[in-house]
Image 1 (spheres, rainbow, N blue to C red):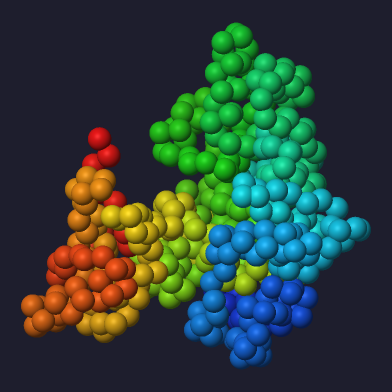
Image 2 (tube, rainbow, N blue to C red; image 1 turned 135 degrees about the vertical axis):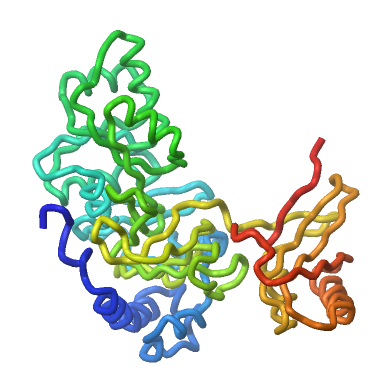
Amino acid sequence: MTNFFDALETRAPVEREAALLAALPLQVAHAKQSSAAFAALLADVNPAEVTSRAALAKLPVIRKSELQARQQAARAAGGNVFGGFSSIGFGAAMPRVFASPGPIYEPEGTAKDYWRMARAIFAAGFRPGELIHNSFSYHFVPAGSMMETGAHAMGCTVFPGGTGQTEQQVQAMRELQPAGYIGTPSFLKIIVEKAEELGLTLPSVKKAMFGGEAYPPSLRDWFTAHGIAGYQCYATADLGLIAYETEARAGLVLDEGVIVEIVRPGTGDPVAEGEVGEVVVTSLNPAYPLIRFGTGDLSAVLAGPCPSGRTNTRIKGWMGRADQTTKIRGMFVHPGQVADIVKRFPEVARARLVVTGEMANDTMTLQVETTCSGPDALASKIGEAIREVTKLRGAVELLSPGSLPNDGKVIEDARSYK
């Protein structure tokens, strides 16, 4: 197993799917029993019946805004700081608690590699016995701890560099000679440029694992030119690792401890394979059992297995944000409202609401894909539905199937803001 973190990565896809679906009803039952929030949210759900992806898709999507609102309401009432979502409380079972912007508070449990980051660190080329320079933040947010616990689980030593103090980061790298770096790509670029400014080199830093921001090909090429092989991972403070890049550089491979769906923004409806939508994750973490948690990120499933030999599903990576709520003529219009309109018309396959003009003098047009033979009548009915759902008037443009871009956009704000 020198090329893979463990045998789970090369399981037959049918074996993996069977294992995930066997764990699913148990996790739903655990969430209902140990989490007050899910006891309420899934009150009418029989966990024993949630044994397929189709059954999972019928459960509500819990988005970050709702998690935050429930946390705030619970704290205001003197209740659970986690809004009833955590199955563990302060004390020995929770060595740390973190805060993300909002604020949203996240628990850290005691399980080895609690955030499941070791798999991604291994895929980035790190091996047991190496020293890693970790420049993710160790304050408030869990990023520093996520990477440190993953590195420790893999048998690595960590230098907690954190953020800032660039010259001291260079000095530590020069003297400690770490095998590589973990942090944001922009900060490593700053460190390397500072070293060059000081007339120094960092010969030991040959590999890196990045997260927290975009890692475009241009930046990857810059690191390659400086002798550093950088790989990206996709993780959140709520869920831990979701997916990671491999040496194949062909999308991101899903982690083994999550069930991932791609749904149409504003809904909980799974999209066809390859279509861009919101990443929704069910975590198998018993300490923080998030069921159908909407990340708010856009991505799409890639066809076929990873050339690296890993057999889990691949996604394209981060492709933007799913929350496209837009204010039009003083009214907020949500992706879910567009979905409500589409559901009224079986002959409509996909739709996109395009807002044009200038602020305070804008127009909206609902572009719909359809094979309907009676376009005039359909357009009129859709126009009525737009007004009923959004309380605004909008034009309707009928398009042939496949006309709309596959970019996950349900609402496109094309207004001029001059």
